[in-house]
Picture 1 (cartoon, rainbow, N blue to C red):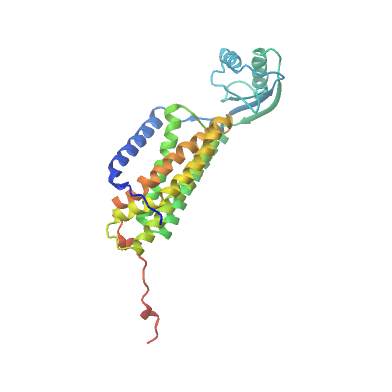
Picture 2: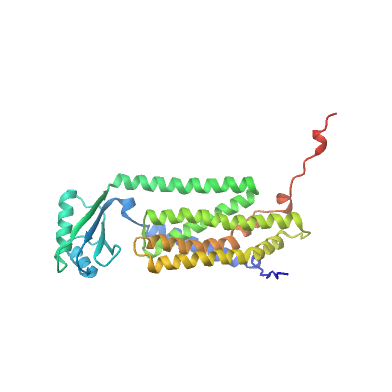
Length: 308
């Protein structure tokens, strides 16, 4: 017989709400004060891939770019120490061709041997604005889809609680990027959308168990039912999250700069999603007045189907 641990999660919901509320408030304040460090996917700009026959001194290259007025240049190795990926935000009053020639001249002047331009991409400001709008709509429809699904499958109080918890996860994850000034690009946005699905799945598992216990036990207190449900699904939640975290840690430290933002966003989001599934999603539903009757199966009156 498997022994189920009994941890009084809901007994600590007050402190959980205070902790989450503090992080949420810090994130919102940071959005207004600092904003997000948007990548060129959203702001527009240029991307250059340059190949060298020797290892590149990125610090020296970055210093040369700063001296020539490209202080916001984003430099990183691309696949190997001989490949460089350079991102620039929009530069006014210069053609794309002249800008490319100037950039290549500056970076080559910082190295012992000149490199070869392998790829040039330009993202216009209008494209960046369209991506911001499309990304916002994608998140909006993702939340609406989750709300409709949970409302149909469970109950509206659980649906609203799930949406608030998901919004809490997304805002706090983005808040880390705002507070620490990390670049927010399309890969990070895709991570936020992926987290909506991941966190929703976590909450659905717990909600399913809450409904099963409500219909199959004599426990009267909804708070006790939710505590039992969280405890019974805890090992599954921890094992799944731990497996995902191992993969994400490998991506953070070994995946390279290209997917670093994605991996960081997923790492923060998985931790927050697991936490909110245990403390926020279910606790909020109880705060909204979730009752046993809300989850009990409706029995059809068979007599209504009988002919007179």
